[in-house]
Length: 472
Image (cartoon, rainbow, N blue to C red; front, side):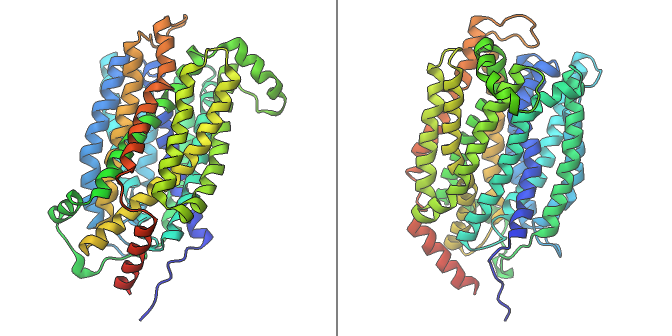
């Protein structure tokens, strides 16, 4: 009898993490720029931008992901269940990402229809790629410590993608288009699509599925859904994921509006001037300020990510996740109290927020993999992809609601898209609320729900030990 080692090489951890780097070139662009793209580049009204991001997003979340989860769990190939989907969708995802961020020369009605079609296709292919990719983390290894380590690698890659999109993309859009943001967006997305496709192919080639369900563990979709309905940790993680991604989409999509409309430009220039001698050249102070604001937070977030494994191994995922998420939320709330001139306080608070949020980032997905183990432990059947598909429902649902809330709330505060004049005071106040009070609420509710999550450190060790004995 051959014993399969569940220890992972550094190459496999890096190879797996490149898949998230590729996916997040798309995902972070959606989080950060989809509302801004539709209102201030593509030319939709705030109402129509809200319709596209909300209704298409929710349809994708509640239809594409569950169906994809059931299909992936029943895929049988020589490469495994989940790896082939990464291969099959790599090129189509890159092509559709480019189409979704292209601004065609259509009438307003034609552009609205084009946005609906391309955004739908983008979310469909993203589900077909990223859901099997996420489920792959639950079958690469059954060793929970290795899973924590792999999650740390994975989310360092996520932070690199986030760093590029949030630090350089706004400036590159302006520069690549010669001032025409629509052309600039198309050029930048073209390059990202090519790079992302290559990275996904590397992920397929460097990874291996080790946790393979026994033939007698086959189950129907109805049995899988019945197992889920009785899985309390799964229900809680679904709700927590939904809430977290509402906040991420809301605050991430609001920063560009915040810097364009709320932050005092004279104070921003004075704050940035001492840094300009050793920073890359940006087209204007708004682009530089947005880049430094996001970039500083992401770099500090990497430190938090790297610490997360040590803390999770010692204190358990749930406790570390709950505490770090709560502290990070306190720093989000602080933005409500800053006047436009308090630029230094804004930047310092963002760094502290991202450090504590960084600790929680890889733990979320490691906890979801633990929920798959919990389901196998309780029911003696493994259904990895459908569990991850449910979490992707939360992710996509949260992203859709959060992105729609950006344009919807701005519309409620009388924001005028593509305006060349100063926005109304109500719209300026709305941008402040979108980076402070509104995004803090879902995080706080999520922290409260985690008190009822039962997979603590002792339960993790019990599940891991029992499953190792069952799997031989």
